[in-house]
Length: 134
Image (tube, rainbow, N blue to C red; front, top):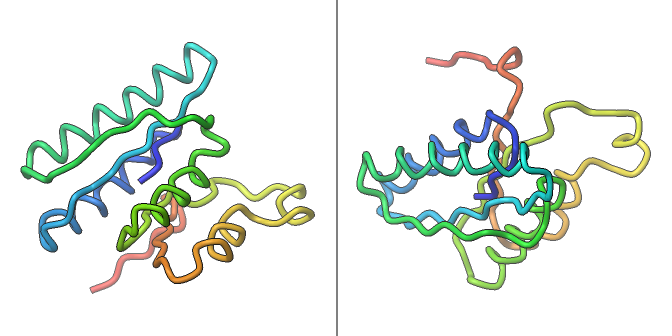
């Protein structure tokens, strides 16, 4: 699970905790390595919240400081997941889609193409698009 500066990372952490609890899985967290002091604090806060959740439910987890910034740590997590033969990659999707994304392509599409046989779960970060199901 890559963790970046967005507060919606807690949604991805919830999904990871679900897999950790009910499938006895270990969760690996890759924290973004941003240069800006404020961004570092945001990433640290998101990692702390995820760790609290995992500790609360006694979920095995490891936290690594990544090499890439918030813009690229999803790709770093993908490479780690593939090289470590992980069973699933949980990623927070794009919050906004810009004209540049339409021009060069969404990061989600690139990750899916590069994932090959690795299952990828994208979490919708926009709460206004959530749909309740029974």
